[in-house]
Image 1 (cartoon, rainbow, N blue to C red):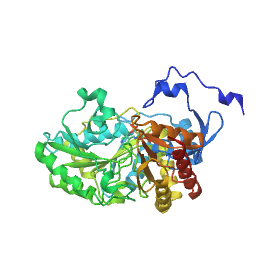
Image 2 (cartoon, rainbow, N blue to C red; image 1 turned 90 degrees about the horizontal axis):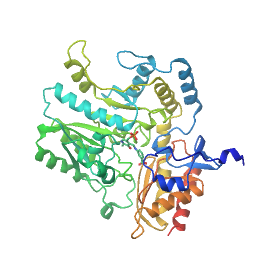
Image 3 (tube, rainbow, N blue to C red; image 1 turned 180 degrees about the horizontal axis):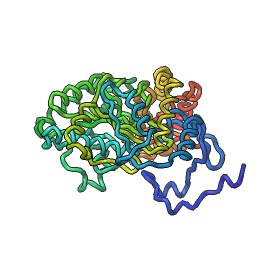
Image 4 (tube, rainbow, N blue to C red; image 1 turned 120 degrees about the horizontal axis):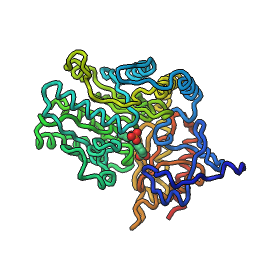
Length: 443
Ligand code: PXG
């Protein structure tokens, strides 16, 4: 082995995000390169990527077409100001994104992350109601166990206790939360969408009545909740949310940072569930995570209402980022969306889903498994926590899998799987065989 490859850099200066810094730095895990379905570690080991990096590298790693597009762009136009100036790539990228959104959601605002997309969508909702003369609509309804990133807005509508705890006194005011849809007692080991649970959407009527419909700007949910452990929407649940929000003039936002771009076998979860929201937030797979990028797709009427209400020559929405539609990110998005189409990767995800479903559910026979949930090319395996040590088992399974050459994602005692959509059937088998072995080895 090349000795230089095994040199570990000084780890002290970097404060790592969402990481147990002391535990990590005592036994670091470093990735040095990647190609297709595999990472290579700093000491030269091949690792099968079971989670597309962090749910984002849908087309597989270091795809030549994307790398070349980024390199070309970096040498042609490195940066252009997006305020009161433009460059062709951002317009082209927006047109391509709009083309695969649900009918009507064809106005695209670029950001640099999922968190920024969420804050952008919340601000657009407020601006829309204000432009319509309903500026009193300021409340947002999220959902327990929802993850909408780490901005103050996204945290407030989010429903993950540990993420909110340290910041609770300063969260955006005027939020409320729907109940989460998970019910292991009644719907464990559901394959695809559970039959149980559509009635939980009726809670929205109760919350709306409590605050009065005229005070509510928008409801935001992940159509399929990823980070909190792959919570699949019950049959009929999202349709009910749509019906109730429409009835009361409330905007519906789908946070599709994980689900957009093929994860469920369609361009969007909205398409998969045949429920069209008013805004869709995206990031991650929009450009295969090659350069940070996010976006919000907005229903044209919402866009037009905001834009047409401003005086001529006035900036209609006082919002945007230095790097909105950055040339490198836009070039990567164009190349990525072309690649998805050329390789029919969304269709491939749909075709592979039954194989993936059978493979993940075969883990049921292994020890410690409490529930398995899946849809499209996403799955979660919830483990029984070790008594008195919540999260320890999940972490140890993650480590065992890594030792055996497979990267999985874990949050607490829930393992999550979201491989690149180019995964082969043999690699799907390898992924879950490794998980089974790891489960047999942990206490
Ligand atoms: N919304 C959703 C639905 C997400 O999944 C964000 C917003 C925030 O995106 P940014 O780009 O700001 O991180 C996300 C991010 C995990 C995990 O493994 C998931 C995310 C991020 C980090 C880890 O559960 N999703």
